[in-house]
Length: 352
Image (cartoon, rainbow, N blue to C red):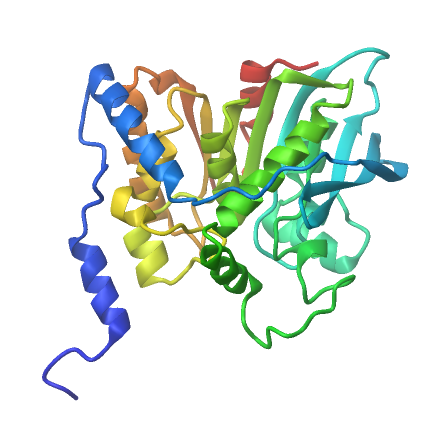
């Protein structure tokens, strides 16, 4: 036992306990909110670094099939100069000829399957277990409700994980690709977030080329790491008119630095110096925002998750948008509540 602290982890915990982000929202009026957002948002977005070069999608339809009353398609599209993605789209079977519907980008979170369970792939016991544990098939279920839904894999997941088929590049050993990609990206002046957001924008641009997609009625939703991507997609792209963040509410001091419950997919240099997670979510105001929190979530614990929500609530109130913020506090684990999603997106995007 030493007389002094020799633990770097303990050092970071103490630093976080004393830290106050530069743009923690302390106001109460619409004027306070407007001034805060005008100054904070550009600084927050700047932490993402440079953006990768955009390219035409060169979409190629690989397969089309019917599943549970939905028409599903798999495309390959280019999302960057040196990389492509598989693009999945779910189209309601009752879509009329010449009709367009609201569309939702469905962001997957961590796990071995990426977009697949989100978009309804229940073809194996493992996929079915993933869906049962997290209710992660929101891309399928929201299409069943009448919305067009679409998704891609983020880098490090599904078909875009270098360790998995079709890549089989196992040079990482036991190291997390999320963190390795982050190191690569920052060496080039980018972040994993800027790359993923750019790819998400490319997928959204491609979705808008479908006649069945109404480009003026776009939403975005996602669970856990997909909640991270939902937040950043919405912060970076105002085409998204309604936003659902599922089980990604907490405080950086606790879930990030104390619990080490984060990775290179979720961070940007200097981000916590500027804002805590509730402040980042509050920058979405006055756009409609639905927050899902699991009362029994073992990943983002309810105590600090609700503390995050209360700060977001304060920001939305100051923005005069308290009626645009909703909470689905559901009696479940780390997963989609699904109790308010249909009504929420129907209210703000319309729908059949």
